[in-house]
Image (cartoon, helix red, strand yellow):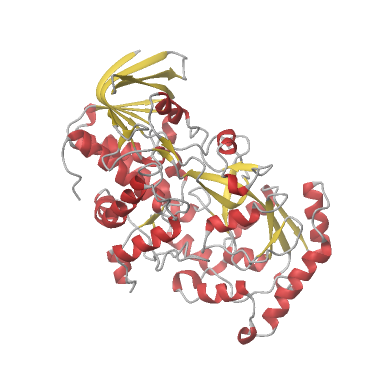
Length: 537
Protein backbone atom coordinates (compact mmCIF):
# COMPACT_ATOMS: atom_id res chain seq x y z
CA UNK A 1 0.00 0.00 0.00
CA UNK A 2 1.33 3.42 -0.97
CA UNK A 3 0.27 6.73 0.55
CA UNK A 4 1.06 10.36 -0.20
CA UNK A 5 0.67 13.31 2.16
CA UNK A 6 2.21 16.60 3.29
CA UNK A 7 3.49 15.25 6.61
CA UNK A 8 4.00 11.72 7.91
CA UNK A 9 4.29 11.32 11.69
CA UNK A 10 5.75 8.08 13.00
CA UNK A 11 4.33 7.65 16.50
CA UNK A 12 0.97 8.45 18.06
CA UNK A 13 2.07 9.41 21.55
CA UNK A 14 1.59 12.84 23.10
CA UNK A 15 4.22 14.57 20.93
CA UNK A 16 2.86 13.06 17.72
CA UNK A 17 -0.72 14.00 18.60
CA UNK A 18 0.19 17.60 19.44
CA UNK A 19 2.19 17.92 16.23
CA UNK A 20 -0.71 16.53 14.17
CA UNK A 21 -3.17 18.90 15.84
CA UNK A 22 -1.05 21.97 15.09
CA UNK A 23 -0.44 20.82 11.53
CA UNK A 24 -4.20 20.52 11.03
CA UNK A 25 -4.56 24.04 12.42
CA UNK A 26 -2.25 25.15 9.63
CA UNK A 27 -4.11 23.29 6.89
CA UNK A 28 -1.59 20.49 6.34
CA UNK A 29 -2.49 16.95 5.30
CA UNK A 30 -1.21 14.48 7.86
CA UNK A 31 -0.82 10.72 8.13
CA UNK A 32 -0.18 9.60 11.70
CA UNK A 33 1.22 6.07 11.92
CA UNK A 34 1.18 4.22 15.22
CA UNK A 35 2.31 0.71 16.09
CA UNK A 36 -0.26 0.16 18.86
CA UNK A 37 -3.95 -0.58 18.70
CA UNK A 38 -6.38 2.32 18.28
CA UNK A 39 -7.47 2.26 21.93
CA UNK A 40 -3.86 2.87 22.95
CA UNK A 41 -3.50 6.13 21.03
CA UNK A 42 -1.43 8.38 23.29
CA UNK A 43 1.27 5.87 24.13
CA UNK A 44 3.10 6.07 27.44
CA UNK A 45 1.65 9.52 28.17
CA UNK A 46 -1.83 8.01 28.38
CA UNK A 47 -0.61 5.66 31.12
CA UNK A 48 1.21 8.38 33.05
CA UNK A 49 0.42 10.13 36.32
CA UNK A 50 0.07 13.37 34.38
CA UNK A 51 2.49 15.61 36.29
CA UNK A 52 3.88 18.60 34.39
CA UNK A 53 6.67 21.06 35.22
CA UNK A 54 5.76 24.72 34.74
CA UNK A 55 7.30 27.98 35.89
CA UNK A 56 5.56 30.94 37.54
CA UNK A 57 2.02 29.84 36.69
CA UNK A 58 -1.16 31.51 37.95
CA UNK A 59 -1.68 28.44 40.13
CA UNK A 60 1.74 28.85 41.73
CA UNK A 61 1.16 32.55 42.35
CA UNK A 62 -2.31 31.89 43.76
CA UNK A 63 -0.86 29.52 46.36
CA UNK A 64 1.97 31.89 47.30
CA UNK A 65 4.80 30.14 45.42
CA UNK A 66 7.31 32.67 44.08
CA UNK A 67 9.03 31.30 40.98
CA UNK A 68 10.92 32.65 37.99
CA UNK A 69 12.52 31.43 34.78
CA UNK A 70 15.96 32.42 36.08
CA UNK A 71 15.55 30.31 39.22
CA UNK A 72 14.11 27.38 37.26
CA UNK A 73 16.96 27.40 34.74
CA UNK A 74 19.50 27.51 37.55
CA UNK A 75 17.80 24.49 39.15
CA UNK A 76 17.71 22.72 35.78
CA UNK A 77 21.45 23.16 35.20
CA UNK A 78 22.21 22.04 38.75
CA UNK A 79 20.42 18.73 38.21
CA UNK A 80 21.46 18.28 34.57
CA UNK A 81 25.20 18.61 35.11
CA UNK A 82 25.49 19.27 31.38
CA UNK A 83 28.74 18.38 29.66
CA UNK A 84 30.61 21.34 28.19
CA UNK A 85 29.68 20.46 24.58
CA UNK A 86 25.95 19.93 25.27
CA UNK A 87 25.02 22.92 23.11
CA UNK A 88 21.59 21.82 21.89
CA UNK A 89 20.40 20.33 25.20
CA UNK A 90 21.32 23.59 26.97
CA UNK A 91 19.48 25.67 24.36
CA UNK A 92 16.41 23.47 24.62
CA UNK A 93 16.47 23.67 28.42
CA UNK A 94 16.55 27.47 28.26
CA UNK A 95 13.76 27.47 25.70
CA UNK A 96 11.52 25.17 27.72
CA UNK A 97 11.98 27.02 31.01
CA UNK A 98 11.22 30.37 29.41
CA UNK A 99 8.30 29.25 27.24
CA UNK A 100 6.62 26.32 29.02
CA UNK A 101 3.98 28.32 30.85
CA UNK A 102 2.75 30.18 27.78
CA UNK A 103 3.22 27.53 25.12
CA UNK A 104 2.35 24.43 27.14
CA UNK A 105 0.38 25.25 30.31
CA UNK A 106 -1.82 27.96 28.79
CA UNK A 107 -2.15 26.10 25.50
CA UNK A 108 -3.30 22.91 27.22
CA UNK A 109 -5.89 24.83 29.18
CA UNK A 110 -7.21 26.14 25.86
CA UNK A 111 -7.58 22.50 24.74
CA UNK A 112 -9.76 21.72 27.77
CA UNK A 113 -7.10 20.32 30.09
CA UNK A 114 -7.39 21.28 33.77
CA UNK A 115 -4.98 20.94 36.68
CA UNK A 116 -5.27 19.86 40.31
CA UNK A 117 -5.31 22.95 42.60
CA UNK A 118 -2.24 21.90 44.64
CA UNK A 119 1.23 22.13 43.07
CA UNK A 120 3.39 19.18 44.14
CA UNK A 121 7.04 19.43 45.17
CA UNK A 122 9.30 16.72 43.77
CA UNK A 123 13.03 16.41 43.01
CA UNK A 124 13.98 18.99 45.64
CA UNK A 125 17.62 17.97 45.49
CA UNK A 126 19.73 16.02 47.94
CA UNK A 127 23.45 16.73 47.49
CA UNK A 128 22.81 19.50 44.94
CA UNK A 129 19.90 21.90 44.41
CA UNK A 130 16.86 20.58 42.56
CA UNK A 131 13.44 22.21 42.40
CA UNK A 132 13.77 25.21 44.71
CA UNK A 133 9.98 25.54 44.79
CA UNK A 134 7.01 23.30 43.88
CA UNK A 135 6.48 23.10 40.11
CA UNK A 136 4.78 19.72 39.54
CA UNK A 137 1.29 20.48 38.19
CA UNK A 138 -1.00 17.41 38.17
CA UNK A 139 -3.43 17.05 35.27
CA UNK A 140 -6.91 16.48 36.67
CA UNK A 141 -7.66 13.19 34.97
CA UNK A 142 -4.01 12.00 34.87
CA UNK A 143 -2.31 11.33 31.54
CA UNK A 144 -5.44 9.47 30.50
CA UNK A 145 -7.47 12.67 30.71
CA UNK A 146 -4.75 14.68 28.97
CA UNK A 147 -4.79 12.35 25.97
CA UNK A 148 -8.59 12.18 25.96
CA UNK A 149 -8.87 15.96 25.54
CA UNK A 150 -6.30 16.06 22.72
CA UNK A 151 -7.88 13.10 20.96
CA UNK A 152 -11.21 14.91 21.11
CA UNK A 153 -9.58 17.95 19.50
CA UNK A 154 -8.09 15.79 16.74
CA UNK A 155 -11.19 13.79 15.91
CA UNK A 156 -13.49 16.83 15.94
CA UNK A 157 -11.12 19.20 14.15
CA UNK A 158 -12.58 21.37 11.40
CA UNK A 159 -9.86 19.99 9.10
CA UNK A 160 -10.25 16.37 10.21
CA UNK A 161 -10.61 15.32 6.56
CA UNK A 162 -6.88 16.12 6.25
CA UNK A 163 -5.99 13.59 8.97
CA UNK A 164 -5.42 9.88 8.34
CA UNK A 165 -4.85 7.65 11.36
CA UNK A 166 -3.19 4.29 10.78
CA UNK A 167 -2.85 1.87 13.70
CA UNK A 168 -0.74 -1.30 13.94
CA UNK A 169 1.47 0.30 11.29
CA UNK A 170 5.11 -0.28 12.17
CA UNK A 171 7.51 2.16 10.52
CA UNK A 172 10.83 0.40 9.93
CA UNK A 173 12.83 2.78 7.76
CA UNK A 174 13.18 6.32 6.51
CA UNK A 175 13.80 7.22 2.89
CA UNK A 176 16.45 9.91 2.42
CA UNK A 177 17.79 10.99 -0.97
CA UNK A 178 20.62 13.53 -1.28
CA UNK A 179 20.05 14.74 2.28
CA UNK A 180 16.29 15.12 1.72
CA UNK A 181 13.84 12.95 3.65
CA UNK A 182 11.11 11.85 1.27
CA UNK A 183 9.14 9.17 3.08
CA UNK A 184 8.94 6.16 5.36
CA UNK A 185 8.38 2.45 4.82
CA UNK A 186 7.02 -0.24 7.11
CA UNK A 187 4.64 -3.10 7.67
CA UNK A 188 0.95 -3.32 8.53
CA UNK A 189 1.07 -5.72 11.47
CA UNK A 190 -2.59 -6.64 11.06
CA UNK A 191 -2.15 -8.32 7.69
CA UNK A 192 1.61 -8.31 7.13
CA UNK A 193 1.31 -6.02 4.10
CA UNK A 194 4.20 -3.66 3.39
CA UNK A 195 3.44 0.04 3.05
CA UNK A 196 5.21 3.23 2.07
CA UNK A 197 4.40 6.88 2.65
CA UNK A 198 5.67 9.66 0.42
CA UNK A 199 5.74 13.00 2.23
CA UNK A 200 7.42 16.39 2.10
CA UNK A 201 8.13 16.20 5.83
CA UNK A 202 8.79 13.25 8.15
CA UNK A 203 8.38 13.56 11.92
CA UNK A 204 9.83 10.90 14.22
CA UNK A 205 7.73 10.69 17.41
CA UNK A 206 8.33 7.05 18.28
CA UNK A 207 9.44 7.36 21.91
CA UNK A 208 12.68 6.13 23.45
CA UNK A 209 14.44 2.81 24.05
CA UNK A 210 13.15 1.94 27.53
CA UNK A 211 10.61 -0.55 26.21
CA UNK A 212 13.51 -2.76 25.12
CA UNK A 213 15.35 -4.16 28.13
CA UNK A 214 18.02 -5.51 25.77
CA UNK A 215 18.68 -2.00 24.44
CA UNK A 216 18.73 -0.59 27.96
CA UNK A 217 21.33 -3.18 28.95
CA UNK A 218 23.42 -2.46 25.84
CA UNK A 219 23.39 1.27 26.63
CA UNK A 220 23.68 0.90 30.42
CA UNK A 221 25.38 3.83 32.14
CA UNK A 222 28.93 2.52 32.67
CA UNK A 223 29.68 4.23 36.02
CA UNK A 224 26.84 2.12 37.49
CA UNK A 225 28.71 -1.09 36.71
CA UNK A 226 26.93 -4.09 35.25
CA UNK A 227 23.14 -3.88 34.78
CA UNK A 228 20.92 -5.44 37.47
CA UNK A 229 20.00 -9.10 37.02
CA UNK A 230 16.34 -8.04 36.99
CA UNK A 231 15.19 -4.86 35.27
CA UNK A 232 11.45 -4.33 35.07
CA UNK A 233 9.85 -2.72 32.03
CA UNK A 234 7.93 0.40 33.01
CA UNK A 235 7.65 1.72 29.49
CA UNK A 236 5.72 0.30 26.52
CA UNK A 237 6.99 -2.43 24.20
CA UNK A 238 6.81 -0.15 21.16
CA UNK A 239 9.51 2.11 22.64
CA UNK A 240 12.29 -0.10 21.31
CA UNK A 241 14.56 2.38 19.51
CA UNK A 242 13.77 0.97 16.08
CA UNK A 243 13.62 4.42 14.49
CA UNK A 244 16.72 5.60 16.35
CA UNK A 245 18.48 2.88 14.37
CA UNK A 246 16.79 4.06 11.18
CA UNK A 247 17.94 7.65 11.76
CA UNK A 248 21.44 6.39 12.55
CA UNK A 249 21.53 4.58 9.19
CA UNK A 250 20.81 7.94 7.55
CA UNK A 251 23.77 9.49 9.38
CA UNK A 252 21.60 11.28 11.95
CA UNK A 253 23.25 11.96 15.29
CA UNK A 254 22.07 9.77 18.19
CA UNK A 255 23.30 10.95 21.59
CA UNK A 256 23.13 10.15 25.31
CA UNK A 257 21.28 6.83 25.09
CA UNK A 258 23.06 5.73 28.26
CA UNK A 259 21.22 8.44 30.17
CA UNK A 260 17.83 7.06 31.11
CA UNK A 261 15.30 7.99 33.77
CA UNK A 262 14.89 4.75 35.69
CA UNK A 263 13.00 4.36 38.95
CA UNK A 264 14.29 2.65 42.08
CA UNK A 265 10.97 1.36 43.43
CA UNK A 266 9.72 -0.89 40.65
CA UNK A 267 7.55 -3.91 41.45
CA UNK A 268 6.03 -6.57 39.26
CA UNK A 269 2.71 -5.43 37.86
CA UNK A 270 -0.20 -7.19 39.63
CA UNK A 271 -1.80 -7.83 36.22
CA UNK A 272 1.03 -7.65 33.69
CA UNK A 273 0.25 -6.56 30.15
CA UNK A 274 3.44 -8.14 28.80
CA UNK A 275 6.42 -10.14 30.14
CA UNK A 276 8.52 -8.40 32.79
CA UNK A 277 5.95 -5.61 33.09
CA UNK A 278 6.61 -3.43 36.12
CA UNK A 279 4.95 -0.53 37.87
CA UNK A 280 6.68 2.27 39.76
CA UNK A 281 5.66 2.80 43.36
CA UNK A 282 5.72 6.24 44.90
CA UNK A 283 7.89 5.01 47.79
CA UNK A 284 6.44 5.68 51.26
CA UNK A 285 8.63 8.31 52.87
CA UNK A 286 8.18 6.83 56.35
CA UNK A 287 9.27 3.35 55.27
CA UNK A 288 12.77 2.16 56.04
CA UNK A 289 14.64 1.58 52.77
CA UNK A 290 17.23 -1.17 53.16
CA UNK A 291 19.75 -3.04 51.02
CA UNK A 292 19.09 -6.53 49.67
CA UNK A 293 20.83 -7.77 52.83
CA UNK A 294 18.47 -5.93 55.19
CA UNK A 295 21.10 -3.36 56.14
CA UNK A 296 20.12 0.31 56.01
CA UNK A 297 21.84 2.47 53.39
CA UNK A 298 24.56 4.73 54.80
CA UNK A 299 22.67 7.74 53.45
CA UNK A 300 18.99 7.02 54.18
CA UNK A 301 17.02 6.70 50.95
CA UNK A 302 13.83 8.74 50.70
CA UNK A 303 11.83 9.82 47.69
CA UNK A 304 11.05 13.40 46.50
CA UNK A 305 14.65 14.63 46.54
CA UNK A 306 16.82 12.95 43.88
CA UNK A 307 15.47 9.96 41.95
CA UNK A 308 18.77 9.33 40.20
CA UNK A 309 20.59 9.13 43.53
CA UNK A 310 18.24 6.36 44.67
CA UNK A 311 19.00 4.30 41.56
CA UNK A 312 22.71 5.01 41.85
CA UNK A 313 22.93 3.86 45.48
CA UNK A 314 21.03 0.65 44.80
CA UNK A 315 23.29 -0.09 41.82
CA UNK A 316 26.39 0.11 44.05
CA UNK A 317 25.39 -3.18 45.64
CA UNK A 318 26.47 -6.62 44.51
CA UNK A 319 22.81 -7.51 43.94
CA UNK A 320 21.02 -4.48 42.60
CA UNK A 321 17.62 -4.54 44.25
CA UNK A 322 16.31 -3.31 47.59
CA UNK A 323 13.53 -3.57 50.17
CA UNK A 324 11.24 -1.11 51.86
CA UNK A 325 10.10 -2.01 55.36
CA UNK A 326 6.89 -0.46 56.68
CA UNK A 327 3.62 -1.29 58.38
CA UNK A 328 -0.06 -1.09 57.49
CA UNK A 329 -0.49 2.39 58.96
CA UNK A 330 2.30 3.79 56.80
CA UNK A 331 1.03 1.91 53.74
CA UNK A 332 -2.50 3.29 54.06
CA UNK A 333 -1.24 6.85 54.54
CA UNK A 334 1.61 6.96 52.06
CA UNK A 335 1.69 4.08 49.58
CA UNK A 336 0.93 5.13 46.03
CA UNK A 337 1.86 4.05 42.53
CA UNK A 338 2.62 6.11 39.48
CA UNK A 339 0.33 6.10 36.49
CA UNK A 340 -3.30 6.51 35.50
CA UNK A 341 -4.15 2.87 36.17
CA UNK A 342 -3.26 3.13 39.87
CA UNK A 343 -4.97 6.48 40.45
CA UNK A 344 -8.53 5.73 39.43
CA UNK A 345 -10.19 8.52 41.43
CA UNK A 346 -7.99 11.18 39.82
CA UNK A 347 -8.15 9.52 36.40
CA UNK A 348 -11.95 9.44 36.49
CA UNK A 349 -12.13 12.92 38.06
CA UNK A 350 -14.01 11.72 41.16
CA UNK A 351 -13.13 14.36 43.71
CA UNK A 352 -15.06 12.81 46.62
CA UNK A 353 -13.41 9.42 46.11
CA UNK A 354 -9.99 11.05 45.92
CA UNK A 355 -10.52 13.02 49.14
CA UNK A 356 -11.70 9.83 50.81
CA UNK A 357 -8.38 8.12 50.04
CA UNK A 358 -6.54 11.11 51.48
CA UNK A 359 -8.51 11.06 54.73
CA UNK A 360 -8.86 7.30 55.25
CA UNK A 361 -6.08 5.78 53.15
CA UNK A 362 -6.18 4.02 49.82
CA UNK A 363 -7.24 0.63 51.18
CA UNK A 364 -8.15 -0.76 47.77
CA UNK A 365 -4.70 -0.01 46.34
CA UNK A 366 -2.84 -1.38 49.36
CA UNK A 367 -4.91 -4.57 49.48
CA UNK A 368 -4.52 -5.08 45.75
CA UNK A 369 -0.74 -4.95 45.96
CA UNK A 370 -0.60 -7.18 49.02
CA UNK A 371 -2.88 -9.74 47.38
CA UNK A 372 -1.72 -9.64 43.78
CA UNK A 373 1.88 -8.36 43.65
CA UNK A 374 4.48 -11.04 44.31
CA UNK A 375 6.96 -8.45 45.65
CA UNK A 376 4.88 -7.77 48.80
CA UNK A 377 5.21 -9.89 51.93
CA UNK A 378 3.30 -9.42 55.20
CA UNK A 379 4.02 -10.62 58.75
CA UNK A 380 3.34 -9.84 62.41
CA UNK A 381 6.98 -9.88 63.52
CA UNK A 382 10.38 -9.03 62.09
CA UNK A 383 11.48 -12.66 62.44
CA UNK A 384 8.52 -13.88 60.40
CA UNK A 385 8.99 -11.06 57.90
CA UNK A 386 12.64 -11.98 57.25
CA UNK A 387 11.71 -15.63 56.70
CA UNK A 388 9.16 -14.60 54.08
CA UNK A 389 11.59 -12.17 52.43
CA UNK A 390 14.21 -14.88 52.06
CA UNK A 391 11.59 -17.36 50.91
CA UNK A 392 10.50 -14.95 48.19
CA UNK A 393 14.00 -14.63 46.73
CA UNK A 394 14.94 -18.25 47.34
CA UNK A 395 18.16 -17.04 48.98
CA UNK A 396 19.15 -16.16 52.54
CA UNK A 397 20.33 -12.68 51.64
CA UNK A 398 18.33 -10.82 54.29
CA UNK A 399 20.19 -10.88 57.60
CA UNK A 400 17.79 -10.88 60.55
CA UNK A 401 20.24 -9.15 62.89
CA UNK A 402 20.99 -6.34 60.42
CA UNK A 403 17.34 -5.63 59.71
CA UNK A 404 16.33 -5.89 63.35
CA UNK A 405 19.08 -3.45 64.38
CA UNK A 406 18.11 -0.98 61.63
CA UNK A 407 14.43 -0.98 62.63
CA UNK A 408 15.19 -0.78 66.36
CA UNK A 409 17.62 2.12 65.97
CA UNK A 410 15.13 4.05 63.82
CA UNK A 411 12.22 3.42 66.19
CA UNK A 412 14.33 4.33 69.25
CA UNK A 413 15.24 7.65 67.63
CA UNK A 414 11.56 8.45 67.12
CA UNK A 415 10.84 7.57 70.77
CA UNK A 416 13.35 10.18 71.94
CA UNK A 417 11.17 12.97 70.57
CA UNK A 418 11.54 15.39 67.66
CA UNK A 419 14.04 17.61 69.48
CA UNK A 420 16.47 14.66 69.51
CA UNK A 421 15.78 13.29 66.01
CA UNK A 422 19.39 12.83 64.95
CA UNK A 423 18.48 10.88 61.81
CA UNK A 424 18.64 12.20 58.25
CA UNK A 425 15.41 10.51 57.16
CA UNK A 426 13.48 12.03 60.05
CA UNK A 427 14.93 15.45 59.27
CA UNK A 428 13.79 15.04 55.67
CA UNK A 429 10.31 13.98 56.79
CA UNK A 430 10.11 17.07 59.03
CA UNK A 431 11.02 19.22 56.03
CA UNK A 432 8.49 17.48 53.78
CA UNK A 433 5.68 17.96 56.29
CA UNK A 434 6.21 21.72 56.29
CA UNK A 435 4.62 21.90 52.83
CA UNK A 436 0.84 21.49 52.94
CA UNK A 437 0.81 19.54 49.67
CA UNK A 438 2.84 16.79 51.38
CA UNK A 439 1.68 16.97 54.98
CA UNK A 440 -1.63 15.20 54.37
CA UNK A 441 0.13 12.25 52.70
CA UNK A 442 3.06 11.84 55.13
CA UNK A 443 2.97 10.25 58.57
CA UNK A 444 4.20 12.23 61.56
CA UNK A 445 7.29 10.26 62.61
CA UNK A 446 5.75 6.80 62.54
CA UNK A 447 7.72 3.91 64.04
CA UNK A 448 8.10 0.72 61.98
CA UNK A 449 7.74 -2.05 64.62
CA UNK A 450 4.64 -0.53 66.21
CA UNK A 451 2.12 -3.03 67.63
CA UNK A 452 -0.72 -0.59 66.91
CA UNK A 453 0.25 -0.36 63.22
CA UNK A 454 0.73 -4.04 62.32
CA UNK A 455 1.06 -6.04 60.19
CA UNK A 456 4.58 -5.37 58.96
CA UNK A 457 5.10 -5.17 55.21
CA UNK A 458 8.24 -5.71 53.16
CA UNK A 459 8.34 -4.67 49.51
CA UNK A 460 11.04 -6.01 47.21
CA UNK A 461 11.87 -3.25 44.73
CA UNK A 462 13.68 -3.55 41.41
CA UNK A 463 15.11 -0.95 39.04
CA UNK A 464 12.39 -0.09 36.54
CA UNK A 465 12.81 1.55 33.14
CA UNK A 466 10.65 4.52 32.19
CA UNK A 467 12.06 7.28 29.97
CA UNK A 468 15.10 7.77 27.73
CA UNK A 469 16.91 11.04 28.42
CA UNK A 470 18.96 10.85 25.22
CA UNK A 471 17.89 10.44 21.63
CA UNK A 472 17.94 11.93 18.15
CA UNK A 473 19.76 15.24 18.18
CA UNK A 474 17.77 18.23 16.91
CA UNK A 475 18.13 21.96 16.62
CA UNK A 476 15.58 24.40 18.07
CA UNK A 477 13.36 23.86 15.02
CA UNK A 478 13.26 20.11 15.74
CA UNK A 479 15.23 19.36 12.59
CA UNK A 480 17.32 16.18 12.83
CA UNK A 481 21.03 16.92 12.75
CA UNK A 482 23.75 14.81 11.19
CA UNK A 483 26.89 13.84 13.03
CA UNK A 484 28.48 16.90 11.39
CA UNK A 485 25.66 19.08 12.82
CA UNK A 486 23.89 19.73 9.51
CA UNK A 487 20.09 19.38 9.31
CA UNK A 488 18.61 16.58 7.21
CA UNK A 489 16.05 18.39 5.09
CA UNK A 490 12.46 17.42 5.82
CA UNK A 491 13.31 15.20 8.80
CA UNK A 492 12.24 16.10 12.35
CA UNK A 493 12.25 14.43 15.76
CA UNK A 494 10.09 15.32 18.75
CA UNK A 495 9.29 14.15 22.26
CA UNK A 496 11.19 11.28 23.82
CA UNK A 497 12.58 10.23 20.43
CA UNK A 498 14.57 13.48 20.49
CA UNK A 499 15.64 13.11 24.13
CA UNK A 500 12.75 15.51 24.78
CA UNK A 501 14.66 18.16 22.81
CA UNK A 502 18.17 18.41 21.38
CA UNK A 503 19.02 14.78 22.03
CA UNK A 504 19.13 15.19 25.81
CA UNK A 505 17.44 18.27 27.29
CA UNK A 506 17.69 16.86 30.84
CA UNK A 507 21.37 16.02 30.99
CA UNK A 508 21.82 13.49 33.81
CA UNK A 509 18.60 14.17 35.73
CA UNK A 510 15.08 15.38 35.25
CA UNK A 511 13.33 17.84 37.53
CA UNK A 512 10.27 15.60 36.96
CA UNK A 513 7.15 16.68 35.12
CA UNK A 514 9.43 17.84 32.32
CA UNK A 515 8.65 14.86 30.08
CA UNK A 516 5.04 15.54 29.10
CA UNK A 517 5.67 19.28 28.82
CA UNK A 518 8.61 18.90 26.45
CA UNK A 519 6.55 16.50 24.32
CA UNK A 520 3.98 19.26 23.89
CA UNK A 521 6.53 21.99 23.18
CA UNK A 522 8.57 19.98 20.67
CA UNK A 523 5.40 18.78 18.94
CA UNK A 524 4.21 22.35 18.50
CA UNK A 525 7.61 23.64 17.39
CA UNK A 526 8.00 20.97 14.71
CA UNK A 527 4.54 21.73 13.34
CA UNK A 528 5.20 25.44 13.13
CA UNK A 529 8.60 24.92 11.51
CA UNK A 530 6.96 22.71 8.89
CA UNK A 531 4.14 25.20 8.36
CA UNK A 532 6.53 28.15 8.12
CA UNK A 533 4.85 30.09 10.91
CA UNK A 534 5.64 31.00 14.52
CA UNK A 535 4.62 28.89 17.53
CA UNK A 536 1.99 31.18 18.98
CA UNK A 537 0.67 30.93 22.52
